[in-house]
Length: 438
Image (cartoon, rainbow, N blue to C red; front, top):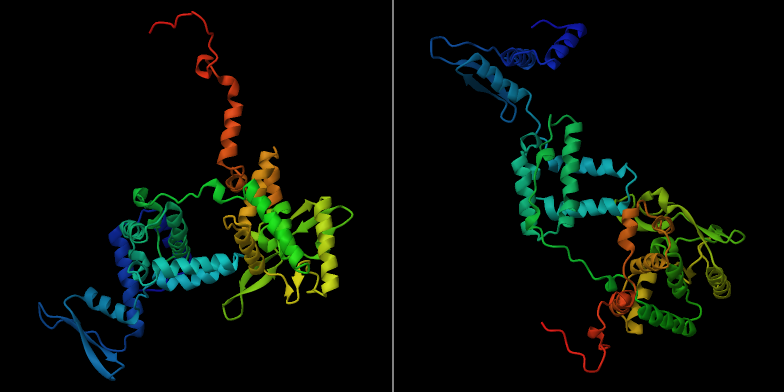
């Protein structure tokens, strides 16, 4: 086959793209190209059959034993096809091979280390050592993917949320494979997953996700007792601040004195404690100059009331008297900057001592959001205050923080003027009036 010029190559590409090339024409071109590539590499003579019904024959060198091995075929196309597979073996691309490359790609997308670790956990739990991740990507079918997900739903007793979270890996890997040219079309786009096998989500009651008024009162009382017993411990002040500013716990422990504008009476929230990978790929605690998901919505200035101003001044006095210092961080102890783990342990321990259900720092955020909404603060203002990207997320934080009994009383009182009959309330007229006949 003669060498074609760039212009001829361009015309051939246009010819193919237009869809006017017949399949047998394309097949013939491909065969000739393969034959030419084989002849450039193959050092031995290829001999045709001596008689009808005979075989084409040649040799290849078996490098392991350093001997020639005979290769035969009944057709010319057949022998060149065998030689082509020997000299140009097709590399089997699988999801298992692609996965580490995908992880490295995601690391460069400014995703948090926690997100990357969650991807790894899902891979190890659901994908590792399964048949589908070892199957050649170009041979994965719609049915393969559907069967895989349906078996996961059954084997792991998944909720729809569990399924959606683990599906991300498969979906992204197949998109990545298409971008790399490993597949021409993506079978994932055509899958239909039956969700009737998913178990219902375990939706906790509102009361277990917020601090009810009586719980908050008991916790505050216990925290104040703690301050009386240990006046130089500032963990309790972090908890009090969470109930006022609704911060993520990682944002609170990353606050610095420079973040406070005393004159403007506001504080700048723009960093957090997180877990990041070190040079060995292991997660370590570190302060990051961004908030959750590196969202611009997390970078915000919150107003400070006299309560928060006094709280910060009290912490400053404790630090000075106790000699606490770690750079410019506000909350410290003798070991240095206060960590998320220490505040979380404080909250849980004081809940137990207060005799209330143990709840988390994130439940404090929900309590703050719920209380703001109860006091008629607009949703978009709560969204800004909490540093959420979207209103939908904020709405999931607004729960009933008054408790079932108080809510029931409010409903009854709100509908008290909707009573339609005095008879039902025992206020009918007495006397000789006859009751109406049925």
